[in-house]
Image (cartoon, helix red, strand yellow):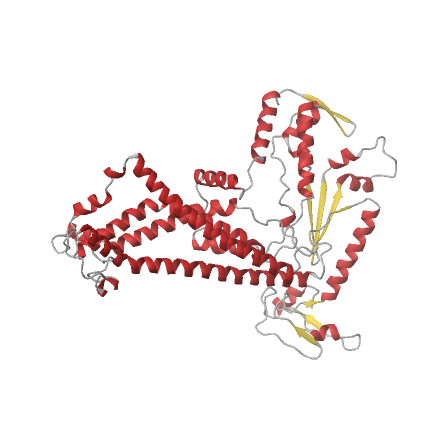
Length: 533
């Protein structure tokens, strides 16, 4: 047969891209279920006399040792090239960390498991407290309304407690009724529709639907604004699994721009979000340069000892490199080669007429070579000075003010490159998640407060009507008592109540968050070595 393995498989009646239906194993070879499966111990115990060949799920021979040796060989070659100045090595975020990459991934998975456990306990405690409070509210509603009716003289003073039938949901004496008592559903179709739409059960369902819609509107704005670890030292295997799950649930959609900006400003004032000023500064600088220079005028500049006439600046966006380390794949060899060095190797040994300084070397384009599992990828990246219209104009004309701006941008870029990396796991992100949940709960509660007040008063009117007292439609209007509360004293009283309840809820949430933060910090330091590197 030929040397092409896939042609042989096609000739034998099986596709080269179709995995085998079942794996086989013998004393001479072992077939793995997938290329990512764990290597058996017999392979590492084998010697030259009892060598065991490994095959993947498609029948292709694999050799993990050759990949390891090839990686070490490429590393040694890169060290030699870096020592002579041909290539420039870029430090990996995981360089210098103890243990192998597999051990680091296992530690990350353990941290994610621990973080999920702590989040589950915290959420369970919060839900238990919420259900306990809501349960008390539901249980106490009949007693509260019964006492209120007694104070109003609408119900007899004896007995002191309401009937036990008021504790049964959807019963005649319960505040929660399936149909409205203000309309007779048997009279006409219009009354039937009105009775269903104004029933307490339907109102509670509508209130819940509105609450979920408001929650979905503020979710993305709060999640994108809260400060959290975002520069991992060791990226996880699948960092976007949570985003995909939230998208499938329908709560990951983008929030409206006014809502996002308002929430971000409030969180920035509290210190829970970082201000967005970098993009606005770049836009102002671009507008300033475009207003002072006319690109239609031909210019003359010197590039590499060559005079270029009629030069026109490029209107391209500035290269964004602040999130570059987080997107790098794991276990890859990254080499950055200046194009000038490649040209020196391709040219003859004649010395150049002029030499470039360190500042000019920073402006040279770069070649990025990535090697992973035998696959080599090459990418050419132009420097920010070439891609930025502002900095290119600054090179051509040399304005002092623009020079200071370019220097400040370069300094900020270098400071961002030297920024320390974070431990991005479910355990380390849990405090930020709880802060985000607190903010979302407060925002949703404040937005839904008017609707909740109206719905609760309508339920109260139905309860009054269920006690065979005065509960007509005008009772609903009179119960709101809007005219008596539209003065400064009434508005101040209502706002004071809302503020007091909000402060109490935030205080309880922050107390629970502090306990969670102390627990997570202690677990991270004692079990996962936080703060020791």
